[in-house]
Length: 160
Image (cartoon, rainbow, N blue to C red; front, top):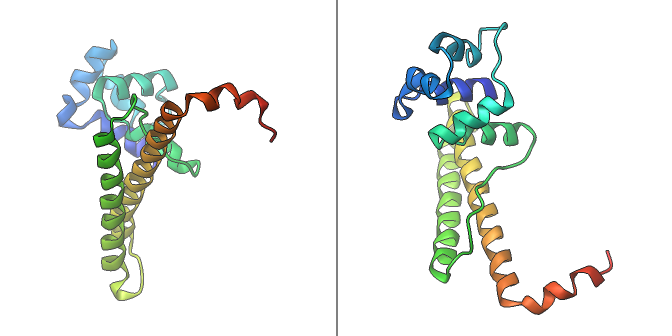
């Protein structure tokens, strides 16, 4: 999804209180915030620090996910050290997300083509699966580092 469309959707999401509540918390007028996230307004723009504030206040990180996707990457939250159960649950979640992607792909390709609506449905599922896999990677690396503290001493001695 486009970054501006994503910002607009995030700001106007009633689950977050909508633009009126968010504008008040950000210390700006509703009209200004609405203009900053409007895809059709060319005179006001959401600054990076404001986008960060929107994500912090709402807990919705779809703006940064849209940015990462546009740049060919993924965004995933990095949480603290994972327990064995959390590691297993992260692995299962990643697997379930991949299943969601394959189910959606199967539906989309039944007629041999991917429509605009099918693409809009498929891309967020792919993004979620990539984020899940990245989260799993982070958990596995942290678990490995915890289980192998002796390797940290030798990190500077490795040759590229």
